[in-house]
Amino acid sequence: MKVTLLGTSAGIPIPGRAQSGVLIETSSKKILLDCGMAVPLRIAEAGVSVKEIDIICLTHEHLDHVQDLPALGKGSWLDSKEVDYKLVVPPGLKEHLVRFWKRVDRSLFEDEKTSLIFETITSRQRFDDDLSIEPFETRHTEMSQGYKIFHEDKKVIYTSDTEACEKIKEVSDNADLLIHEMSSLKNTQGHTDPEALISKMKGSSVEKLVLTHFYPQAAEASKEVADKVEKKIGVETISGKDLKTFHIGS
Image 1: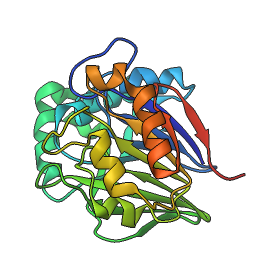
Image 2: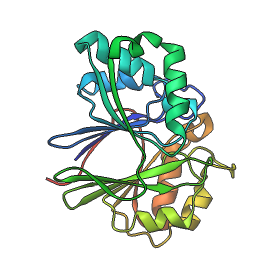
Image 3: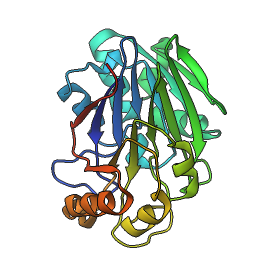
C-alpha cells in the first residue's frame, strides 16, 4: 500500500494544509478516506486523477470531512463524463450527503450522470481479492466511525475525529500504520490531545503512528507533540504534513 496524507488540518483553514483526506493506493484500487476542503486539489498534486478513485470511505457528517465531495464529482464528470464511486458511509449519512450534493450541484444527478453506490458495512468486508475494509466506532458524533484497511497481510488504521480511547488501541493492535487525530493541545470533547493519547496508547503494538487533523495551535506545535508522544509510548510518531507518503509492505 501507498498511503498519502492529502489534508492534515481540522475545521479552521491553515496555510499549506487542506482539510481531512487520506489516499490509499493498492495495485488495483484507490481508496479515499474523507474529502474535506481542497482534497481534490491534493489528489491531483499526488499525481492521481479524481476519476481514478474507486472507493470513498467517509467517517462522519462534518463539513471538514465531506465538503469537497461535490467538487470531486464535478471534476470527474468534466474529465471523463462519469462520476463512478462506491461510498462506504456510517448509518444515516447517505441521505444527508445526497441532499447536500444535490443542493450544491444538482446537474450531476440529472440524466443519470452519476453512478454512486452507497454501502453501510458493520463488519470486515472484501472489496478486492487482497483488499478488505472494516469500520469501528469512534467517540466524536453519534454516527462517527474510523476504518481498518487490510491489504494482503498489512493493516492501516484511520481514526478521523475521535477522543483518545481504549478502542483505538484495541483496533490498532499489530497495525503497520495508525493515522490518529491530534486536534488540540488541551482536553476538548470529541477530540484528542497529547496527554490523552499518551495515556490510552501506552503499550501499543502499532508499528508507526502519524498525527493529523490539527487546529492552528496544535499544528504549530505538531513536531514537539510527535516527539513527546514517541518518547512516552515508545512508538515511532510522525507529525503529518500534506502530501507526505508512506509505503506499507513490498
